[in-house]
Image (cartoon, rainbow, N blue to C red; front, side, top):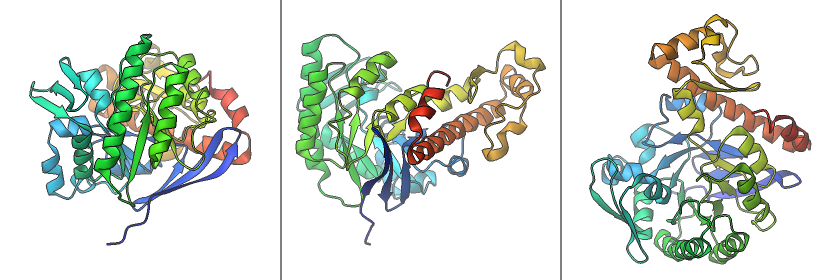
Length: 370
């Protein structure tokens, strides 16, 4: 079967902010794009049908978690992740490097063997090499595959971050060799280097020499301030390739997204809208609100009158406060879908303002409010 080749093109620019189109054989993705996170082959508390109604055009799933359970062979047997979870959207899978850092209490990094760690679920021992990460992602049949990298915790130790960055580059070479040439799939490199400008620039330069289909900035969303994150992006924005998508991994708040788009980022993912939705925190055009707060017991106004898609504003703050304070699962379902929908409405307005040449004004209006 002949598949459509993966491709990307920039359609409009407003300074460094870009509006573009990623073409895949499963459908096109308008950028800047936000990818809801389907960690374990599900976007928590939502169906794929509802996710599509929000305007989401791609989701992210997690190599680490799916490797541990149910295991790649079980998913591969039915034809891959799309068939397993009944999803016809493009899927990006991360490499598992971040979860090795964040979830495994006992892990060892070996230059040749990869990450050796114990499962956070049952303690089983795993070895995730660059080749194994690529094998798993191809077994999942994801459309955008990420290289295996080491994602260090935030640190001011220059030598530690330098060595980690060099290891990630070595693993990038091995990841690319293991991936081979699959025109209808994409392999993204991941820029590392912590908060050090020279290490980030060196990492990007070496990855450009290896030639990937897209370039991600990793190693952020690990405790740095927004100012520090924007500092990293400012040092890379004029060095990232014009003809490839730029992906900021694990970010973030609406404010983070606005500032990152201003610095040339095209793709985002974050658990924040779904995780917040399960705990009663709503993102609205008037800012964030905690619906567990007692003041909403007498507030019969809609959740957000400005969010019109899916008619979620038919639910009052009073009613949602009741659902969360009685631990009713419907509250999590409504608010999770609302938050994802809010993020997608934000992305649509970002794209509209880039096209109209008004993005900077739009960004200034909302970056300190959302």
